[in-house]
Length: 607
Image 1 (cartoon, rainbow, N blue to C red):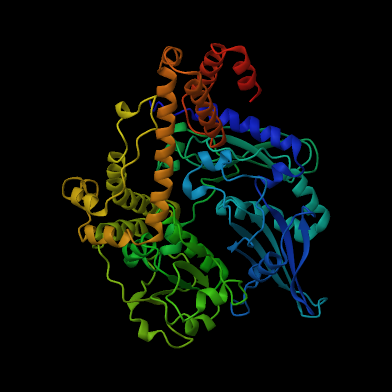
Image 2: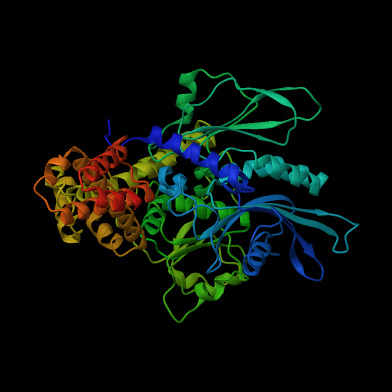
């Protein structure tokens, strides 16, 4: 058992903190899931415009409102008729204060890094409807319902929209207001906990037949209705960073021998990878490397749905490593960063963009990697695979699908993966299973790459016996790229991966990427916090009172002030210390204070 694993007590603290916050702040529970809900319509004079927003007092800047308006509608080239769902991501305005969650909020502390709440960006989850309507001057009813959130729960919110949006388009504002009030009754998302989330109902009794114990799940419950109003209720488990990576919901479900439910979604954030990558499977190794290295990539797609799903699938391909570059699942010429990202006076930024406007073919000709894909249509055979082509061929608006790049991969392709997927197609294996195979392959590939780095990083940590209660903790040794490279011969990726190639060259290129910088900063911070925890525990095990016997009052007061500062820091940063350590240290401080003269005791107690 990990001595620093006090996740159970932390979860209890998180629940209590969430409950306290919920009772203090208006719309607090709603805000833990969503920033706001917007309705965007098309006005003949104004163009796209926000028609409604809930909560009505939400503080969006004019720039953010404009961005949401433009990103909530497919551009005219997409020709989306009927109902379309897609997502976008936009940068929070400079100087804007974030929501009531602080940087050290408990959710981000316990969530996987890939599912942490965004602090500088919003996600927008869109349900767009365009249907012919002769009563409208333009001839079409065009409207989007948008959920704006800091959480990357793409699958969860898309399915939530499938319930809310059709009802809203039929019943309009009263329906939306009722849903928002209902969401404000939801408990806050807590990593590792299973939550019951009712939506669109009034009076009912919910009977949960069973629960899936897997990394993420969403079960629609059986209901007994006592009125004409039907209620949908979801049982959701929020992933935790302590979850085992790569768990199989399908296998575990069979193990539990569950009774069938009306609807079951196995995840809150994962996409259908097989559907997203079906036309580029032979280039999966190349795309994984490009995302790992944070290379500038443009995905040109026929619709916002294809664009956003492909970009999000690419970002997730290096999980559990966090993609530390910017990414925009759907990007338009009206975006605030359009000039910043399309300038030719400097090298393309480290960003992944999803676009649908053919205008971008000319705009992004100087970019090193362009992925042009068609509609994502599942068929009974392996879709035609796009070819890797030279960038010089990317000239005309009718450019054919393909990957336009001069990039040469460091690692060889895994031919066995394609054979396995082909066999799955022949056996009519469900897309969910094909996606699970792809996700497992990418997870193992990323883990094989990261494990040597984690192993080397662990060697930089000071030994436990070198931590003294009477001295400042020793420093973590600096990361040496050459020292790490020298470890690869005996402790490299070859221990866990069968892939051959220039792993050393891939690492050297990775060291220059934003993903390495982001990974190292996060891990160094975690190691520093762990070292601080070890120091606190060592201090607790020391004989503080005995140490003070031959020390002057000045030295003792200095010790007390330093210990109090450490306690305050541990509390503020929510350090994962062993249970009871902080309380024990507080008792020691009081004991030491009580040994001092009364005048000093009075001063120290007051502070």
